[in-house]
Length: 286
Image (cartoon, rainbow, N blue to C red; front, top):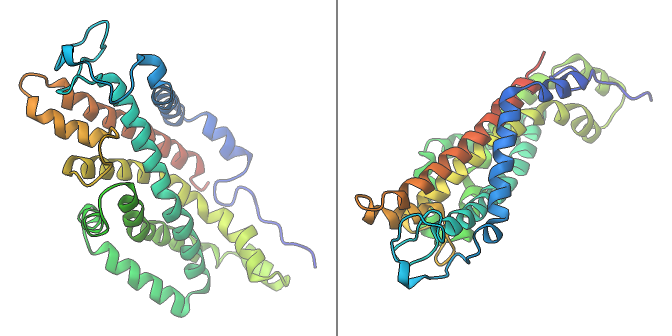
């Protein structure tokens, strides 16, 4: 049998999409900003010369100086070092926490949309149940039950976060499965596995890829919120949420202790949102 070819531009793919990626100001700006953030958090200890938990008891709650560029906290720890180390932790946990939801949600959404029937009904009922609860309330509740720390964060997001990917990909799959080239592939004798992998999934996964950038932002905000509540990354490992929580006690006298970690969260979220907007523009069906 002759394999059925799929137009590369059918759902925004192909060379034109690659050109649009390079021509998107939002994507370029987001990538530059994210690269600067990642570079800074990776070389943090080399940049400051301190370890995150190293104490300078002679300079407790000290202001910015040549020795401590952003000052020190209530235990004399260098604030810049902890800020960068916390960024490395939160970014790592944020990325790892969305991997399972992305792969599982994309796979189950594609299968449910393609086959329909009982599988689609069961999947969508589970999705309806999970989306009925406020996202952050459900995450916080699950982490509280499972236990604080990164393990609880990973489990909570694995249980909850896949539903958005499943619902998004399922909707696109319902459209793709009715297309002429999928019908031609079936008439050509191609197996369901080959149709799914070669013709359906490449045209539906782009929606999940676009969403993953926004999802990482949501996860990082959740991690910071959990850290603020004492349920996230546990001390002595620095975390932006923990830093905000610890600094609020000194908000009137040393406002930078809470404000700067908050700004770091906002700037990181901005960079990922710009990348998501750029990907959405480039991958939008033409």
